[in-house]
Length: 375
Image (cartoon, rainbow, N blue to C red):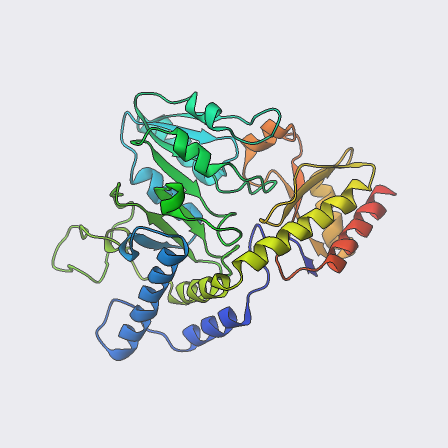
């Protein structure tokens, strides 16, 4: 099968990731829970991953790198662990339900209010002016994705951060942006960055992380054993232990470590490659008269499009069943951007590429779309 669903989960992993995961599954112990040599060796690799992530994202210290099973868990820690009753939040219409649903719950039950910033009519992107127009005296946090999982659009994070008051926190969902282009937390001014290890970071499913600045001290949302301060019935008051209850997924963390090491030497190459692949695909679809595109060339590898009469999920289903091409059709867990784009009725078809994909594979997609249109 030609795999064009990398925005959901990266389909192909580098050999070094597969080798590391295989070794971790064959021989591993519980990192941080025992004092024997094997446990200590595993704990050392977990610590190396913290260092690697902190370095890769220009974070605020290895102790402020918390491992999660995905970006959704990281976002829940960021929102539930930071916000308090009476706080106001600004989110964008580009956000995934992993941001919107927690905010909706917090507004309904915890006395937290949020507003949603729409897209600029000319650029179909966010503007600092539109974000700042929603500021209130009690605005505590602004949540802006690093890249839309629907069409690959990238908000101007630096400009938005510069326009915000110093006391307002910036939370960035890195599920789609991380691993596709440079994200420097300190340079941009990101206070909380969430990472999905299984997408652009080349890790396996079950890997994720939350990185946060020294301006905040998130409270735990999960309570239990940490391997530290076991005599106390309270959670440790230091990071990362305060946010990491239970056994860590050692194989997933090892995969993320090797993914980061792979990216460190190839990020520029991957960014260029994916921009070229999306441009190539967009050029091909533009030649098909009954399709409309909703993306521009981007380093996230995402091309969103729809047929003017056929349902997006139907087109995606045909691509899979009859042409052996994996895409995703529908709303992609981000209803508000579909509303902004005018595609809330049946969503979009999303083809999302890896740098392992080729123009020849994209040619197969374009040919298949032409055949579907000719029915």
